[in-house]
Amino acid sequence: MKRKIVHIDEDKCNGCGICVPACHEGAIQIMEGKARLLSDNLCDGLGDCLGECPEGAITILEREADSYDEEAVQNHVSRLEKEKGSVTPCSDNAGGSLPCGCPSSQIKTINRMKEIDGEKVGECPSLLQQWPVQLALLPPKAGFFQGANLLVAADCVPFAYGNFHQRFLKDNTLVVGCPKLDDAGMYVEKLAEIIKYNDIKKITVAYMEVPCCSAFIRIIETAMNEAGKEIPLEKIVVSTEGEIL
Image (cartoon, rainbow, N blue to C red):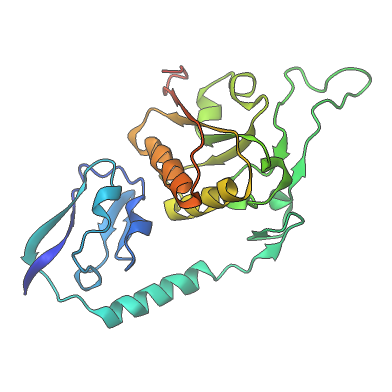
């Protein structure tokens, strides 16, 4: 039958993944670095995902397509939920839950005033003030978020920009992630909880100049909207040559 259905222009798509959580049917997924429609019968053609794409890669067109199958959608969404919940969380000492109990997810605050033999450790001392830093591992109610200046950094930034610690980390609480490779919906949910439960003073987002990295801006803005808060947002772009643009 001929009907309206979502069309994704792969030439325009940068794989940011913002459209994925916007599709309530789970019909869109990131595959091989691009957003793709999994099956015609999962798409209702209403286009809830249209306004979420920063690249304008999603449109609605009319073409021959299988009928929308509500039962198939329910089964598909149910399967996605089971896959999402397949990792058993464990409790942390800050009231949140983490996907594992390994040292990579054990939270702690780092006292950078500590000295050994009267001298700071290291030739170029770290200014990191908490652990962990990966957004997926961070519990939203961790104490170091309360009253913090939040630094959201794309995980390529510290490698590209040589003065990352002095320029960005001082007096900031860090969260790190990759909006291209990770689940953008999870990022929105986690940041919304961090913003909702803590008195965040300011958010600085540091991201690379590549198009997919700019998705962090939309993710943060969406998270603030879901949390019902407006927080000053500073945007810093780093070039692949390691310069602040």
